[in-house]
Length: 552
Image (cartoon, rainbow, N blue to C red; front, side, top):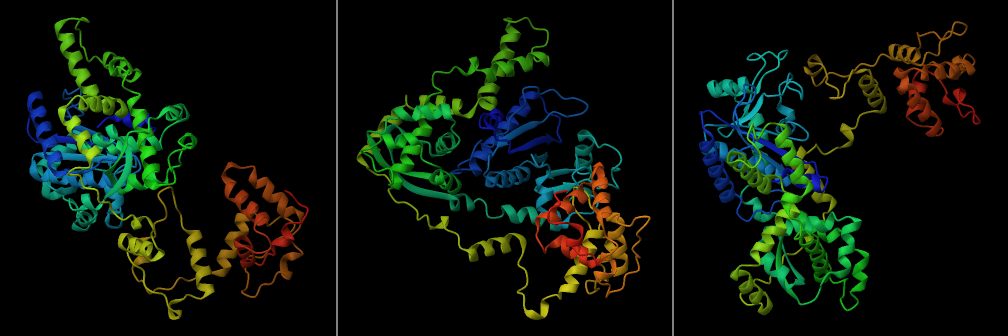
């Protein structure tokens, strides 16, 4: 909901959603559409507690259409460390695209096209982070990918051309069913999963806080985050936390927030509360929540339109021509200014400041007084709590989770165990493979016959290692035609100080960092280890290369 809320706690995990329409809409119609979408979101996310920002669609403050980017709605949602929010947003986006068939939605996060990451096992070979730009969208409850035969990968595909092509040719761009299923399987448990992710606990807190969390359960998120992410300056506020006039009340957490609060360290000032058993879970959780609430209350004296965040926001608008040529103080200028203030307070305002003002307004209502009386008397309040045994995960449960998420491997038996020489040859073949930052991809021809055994050419491998280490000198030449029974004694007399000299010379090159790592491994691993095994493959005893007193 508020982009700067991520910055305030140095979070950078955000989901960016951009909504384009196949219809030509004016500004008022875009506003009506955003209201309709937000109503849909609200109806589908009842009882959902967002970890950081609420998922909300809005019309950007600069809403004019350009040749490069058509007019659109936007959402920038910070989810912090709880990835469950990210996938719940995908569920909502799919539902929105089903209800509003004219909408085309572009989705990415800080890692890029995370939908493709989820479907990585089923992607075409041409699709990678670079080629995916402006090619992946959600339209009418399906993932759409613009293929290279439609738009050449060598040419930059503009967002305008991309969305127009999908609007006109949706059947051509609809992704493979395996890609669709990969995404759907991740979100299919919603909306039932909303309640499965909640945890009810009885906590002892001051009456005001108990009433606030009873009326607005979703406010538990900013309060927990405020405590768990507090700094040294904010910790000074905890010395005067009023932990009196307390009551026991049922508080609804997400499982993520409950685990985070429960495992956060108590601050030193908790020792000041000598009359309170801080080892009691109800008291300890209550103290932490009270401290987080204190941080938020401390924002009450701050005018959001005098904050540094707002001044930077206003300065950015001015530099980018938002106010056009209107004179400051004029009628048109003031209308634009009010629009900017509304945008800032709903979208850009730091979350703790926004929550503080929401709580201040809540305390003025009659329902707040009534709720305080109810929590004091415990009348008509649910005082049940959930078992937190789910916090203890056994190795078997972890295996089940991993198997469900990544697929179950076959049970191993002795007949399936590979001999050591086959493992060595497989490793040697792997080392020959070319890779880049995206990893190693086996050639298609290697995948034709799964029963083909990997052939290991010992002579070729030995020759490659010799050339790599550059240990052959003009005076001392090691024949590359090694036989399988080539022994250490056959070459040990030909290995002398020149080997280390050659290695040190190679290390001076920027391209030889691998050699440096290889030598470091030789010195650190002891008598045996990976580098010893590699050298033995070509008949070299590592101890002939390194003297015990040689530091170089």
